[in-house]
Image 1: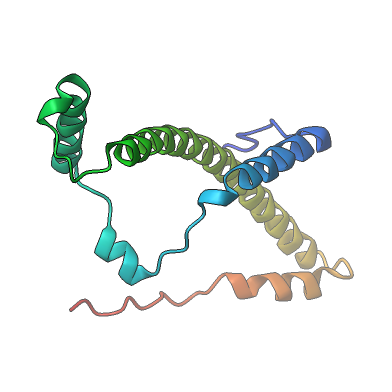
Image 2: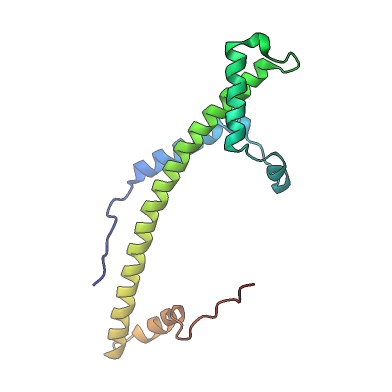
Length: 158
């Protein structure tokens, strides 16, 4: 018999409400910075790579430590705001990704538990159908559509 009930921890209704309220508060707090970029815009502006981040960091360090060497054509107050916002956003994104990963992991275990229980129920229904217990024939016929006996074709690779 396979492992079942891999995750017996469930959120209470109060915890679900708290989490949903927290997400709503976060969405509201971040509403002012929401920008919808098209796929083209994402590609055009993209995320700067690690080498370019190091470059930006070095320019920021020079501006902070030796401002007399900084270009006067740059709005350094805006540069600092952008720089600090980027750091804050990176931290928030990292935390949100960690929360999302933890939620995904918990969901995977619940999905697995549900699937294993469904398989057990299907096996039981097949057994009961074999004993001619009323009602199980319809159930098995409805459920067996999810179990194809022919191997699925894989699309050719190009």
